[in-house]
Image (tube, rainbow, N blue to C red; front, side, top):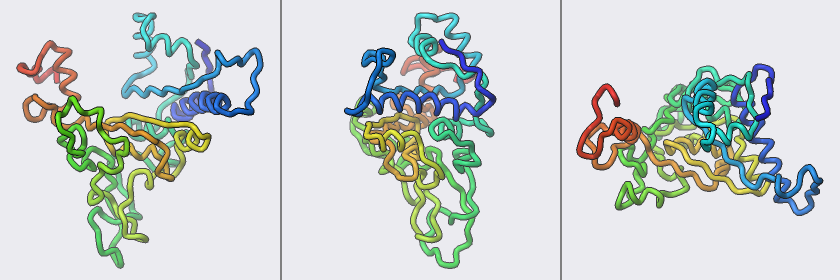
Length: 277
């Protein structure tokens, strides 16, 4: 693994630099006029770029795991890439602004995203229908509360046979957002979707402009913010609601707690101990 002791920058910029480099390679591979040398033979040209964002995984956690599982898929990915040893996350550190930072290269002051539940002094509250003379100031909620149905893993799409049918979930996640829960633009008197709230492009916009395909999977439909200001950065966004009620489990058991129950040896007919959830 090549270790690059870059100057202290955000993890977002470092990650974007790494992804951007691979994206450029993939773009060159897709361009008929692209030239190659012996050092860049077709066998070494990246055809696909895979970005894995693991919430809460610290550098020390990764090093610990790779050292103990040197033949694992994660170890192969880590040792075959570039490690930015002086990178750091966004401030404040949270999964939503952190991922936005990774995919834009911007910090919260640039992207406008400080948290998944914030406040805007320029927008009107959700549900505002008469905008003339309305006083600005609104909550900007990008959590599971935006779902049509946050208690269903398909976010309210209405699929039959869940959870087994979840792979039939639409790739157009924006359609599963309830517009009545979005803040309102005082100029247009229309709801402001997450992608419109973002101030900068994402790497998906860059990839699309290069004529390549894009896809992403995340935990809430609000992650359609990664489409970028154009609204079309991601062609296939798979966003099942992980905080929804887990089918076949007691009330209050969502899909994140379901994973914990299996780690403790629990099954559908036996709930994990409260302290393990």
